[in-house]
Length: 479
Image 1 (cartoon, one colour):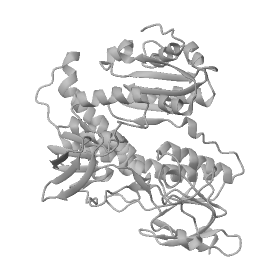
Image 2 (tube, one colour; image 1 turned 90 degrees about the horizontal axis):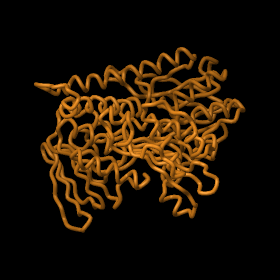
Image 3 (tube, one colour; image 1 turned 180 degrees about the horizontal axis):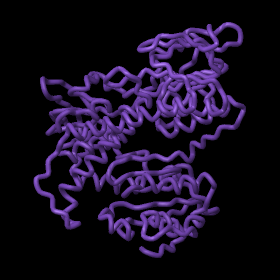
Image 4 (tube, one colour; image 1 turned 45 degrees about the vertical axis):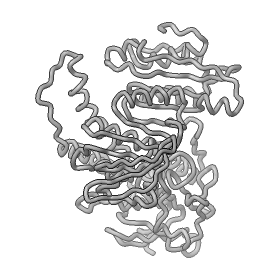
């Protein structure tokens, strides 16, 4: 093995966890390589993984475009802007989305060159342990064919959409997130199985563009992981917009026709229902991507659900092998993967990488947006923790009124004795940006009083966070 193909760190996977881990390892002075097999339409590399190619980035592009379309058709008139002859150019909308994706792909290529990360375009597979103390041999197959060695390997191969038995993805009629982002015509009738993040975001995109959207959710409660006061407010808003949301359903048979899909299911009362859709999005979760990784070759252990087993610092059962992101335990979030990737690179360098699972923010980019960090009221009640809570509605916020979007609220939950913030929950305009203040506050063990005492610019949406913190002590000023 030539020295050119011997590395200190090799990262398998170029998604958020992988490419960030590679950059940080290179910054720390390690000779670093990253292997990734994503391809663009021309066969070239498409770094960024699911997030950049068929996840976070393209979905936000379509959410933004579809929201502009809906505003032009329904909200501009209130602002004194009259629009006539409004037309949807879906091809251009999808083209813009693809352009946003490419810009992010190219940005990662640039970052690799800037940080001197060697890139291999293909699938990385464990081939065995290298001779001596060389670590591991990794074979690369695909657009590039090679064999390299590394003393440390970081596995960041991400996840794949979970298929519903009997309804495998064809990305034409039955769609995963991949197909849902590339429908070439607005379906008149769109079905969505799963009222989670992907289902609600994609359902929102196509509803805004003219589809009649029906969401079928197996759980009896809407957004069960979300604080239920917030979830109920979001549910009310979505139903008002026109999403038909059915909870507590049990999916039966799914039958594909020539141009449609028929779903048979039992509703919450047990009554049999049959509905036919032009397209069906299945968003029932994701599974770790370890196919073709060669785990059996080196004895890399998986848990009972197929995730790579790791300890609290992302170490696997093999010395020098680490794993981060969707392929390990914890929330399947791009920013969680990034934090783990940085932390692992720093741990390899002998530093103390930091990831606090208690302060990882969650966001659903619908309209209204939903964001939260920390514990919900339901979790605190179940744990027997004494708490106090305060909330503030956006309808009493001056900036929200000026925006013309007063849906939702901010809610702060604090320890009843110490006043330490235990959770912050939001539904409303641009709360994906507001949640960061709460994350910082909780990371530094702030009290609700701390946020209440901080001066917030006026008029801003962030004042709702201050007012909710004041409300914890029952002294909100503007409601």
